[in-house]
Structure formats: C-alpha cells, structure tokens
Length: 123
Image (spheres, rainbow, N blue to C red):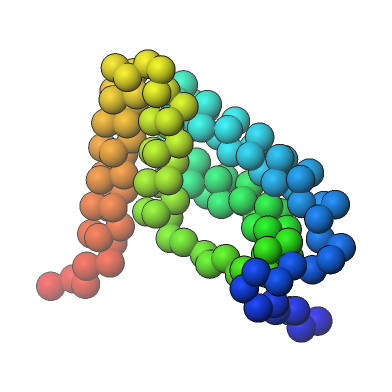
C-alpha cells in the first residue's frame, strides 16, 4: 500500500482523534525508559533501542496530523536525546543530573569506541 504524503503543514482530517493517545502513550513509555536509565537499571545503548520503538506510534500519528514527515536518527543521536531527557528530568537535582549525565556520556563514548573498532578493517 503506498504511503500517503502531505505537503508540510497540511494535516489529514481524521488523524486528530488517535494523536493524543498515541503521543501520550509514547511519552509515558519514554519517561519509563528515562527513569530506568536514571536508576541504572537500563544501559544507554539498550535504552536507545527502546526509545526508538516507543517513538514509532507517536511518529506515525504526528506525521498524519501535521503532514510533516519525520526522519530516522541513528543510535548516537538517540543516546544524546536520552542524555538530554535525563538531565531535564533531574533539573531540580543538579548534582545528580551531572553525575548521571557523565555516566551516560561515558557509556556512549565506550559504545562508540567499540563500534569504531568493529568497523576498522584488519591490517
């Protein structure tokens, strides 16, 4: 089935009813992921995969409602988004926000290093 495209800013008339539920569910799922990351129960790279899945239903609804297509972002960008959400969630606790953000930045650097090594051809 072909995908219906819309000019920017032109919404599908019947998209609005599903939008709030899908967006709210996606936000709730994302916040649960963020809480697990803050508590140290979920590694950053795994959280990125879950975060992208949580975004899918809302993404489809937002595209229909706004007529603006979204794009896929890579895991590094999703990780940086998660780090930003963590920092904002902990904004009223700046020391914890700094500590958790530094831990996550370290996880991201480690994962990116592993990926770079995996992509390096043997000599």
